Length: 436
Ligand code: AMP
Ligand code: GLY
Image (cartoon, rainbow, N blue to C red; front, side):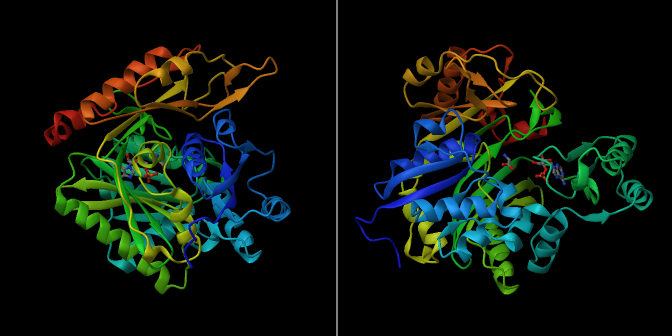
């Protein structure tokens, strides 16, 4: 049953990044949201609801808090609670939950699982093999030739991927994985064909049967301008992606539907967000990866454009009534630039005082989502992570949204503030910019 008009519920959101600030803001805006708890939250989510100090990865802690407070919906932001089965525990306690169980979360938790689903569902993706020993992995590197991609099989916060330009670099990456650079995540190594083209993310709401695609977005994964340097969790993003053709969009939507249908056929009841990461190759879109959750920072440009009530949509996913929902999107563009601590994705210092957020948000249609912030003992807002703030702007045109976002970035200060100045630069030039 869909929610009735004046129904009010308490919502518990798990997570503490910029994605969770964007989710929290949208959930808190809903007239259905009587009270919002965020566990553990950050300096920004505290503006939208009440941060609570419970361990988001502990099923017992989450379920007992939800029961004690009479929570009517649990929303799981990050992958870590999903892959340890927090959603299963919440549902077993009879509480609606937005987020797949342990089985569905393997779409993200194991690249091998995701590749097997793609192969069964006939979803185009890069050729690959997975290995538990270095010698055959290195032989496959030589067979594919450079450029070639080496990935840790498990979760590595977006950093377990090396796009190697030479065979030597690839072999080095294989050895680093097996030597424990990514801990257990690297015990199995995937070696795959390097795809070329613009990237595009297409996220979808699903209740396990119905699939509702969200607006497209494009992240910038590399640390440095010109898409150079190591992979990060994401340095900036925009939505929608203007260079995607109608045919490509249709193909991506079809693949999202096939993926959910295959999960369903295997008896996996997937309720939440399925994130499709695509490469728009000359042979059409191919899947790079699936994630079992909203993207970070993609959420920070997708949700501000969503016109629906997020509590209603998430409850429909959790209670399998999504067929009754239609999504609507604002025509405006959204651009978000990530301000990071100097050194990210490597080591960085924390505890730097942040100023200027109010001045940034005083600019038209600018929202600053907190990713890695905390309040220190003196009551000051300080940096507490590699990705610190997501400076998001909306505007009727892509160019204006970029200008607004960058103007807002200039208003904010903290020691070591680092960001890419070319977020969306290629998309602004058009498709040919990817061939340069
Ligand atoms: P993943 O975590 O698998 O999405 O990989 C992170 C990033 O690495 C992607 O967003 C791409 O930028 C890059 N990447 C992953 N797989 C490939 C591939 N097969 N070919 C080219 N680039 C890739
Ligand atoms: N921005 C990439 C991700 O969330 O996986």
